[in-house]
Length: 64
Image 1 (tube, one colour):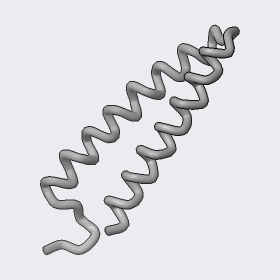
Image 2 (cartoon, rainbow, N blue to C red):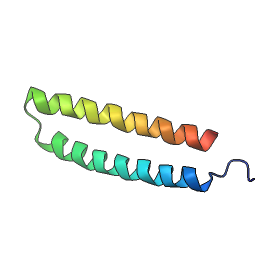
Image 3 (cartoon, rainbow, N blue to C red):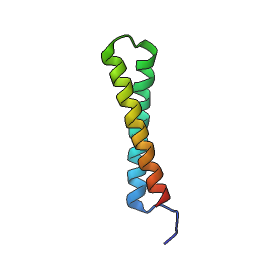
Image 4 (cartoon, rainbow, N blue to C red):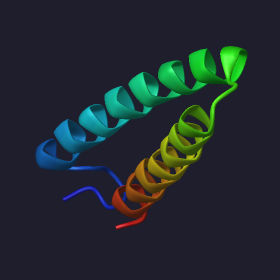
């Protein structure tokens, strides 16, 4: 097995995580352009946390 190269299962997971991150990032950018309410600010913080979590999962997959 090639060390450092993700297997097929991980490739699917990576693709799904990247897609999720892209969707969250698009929503985040839209909210940042027009944010006024406390609810929107909470959602921005939630999106940023979720994006960081996805990035950490991607790093973990790549490093294992």
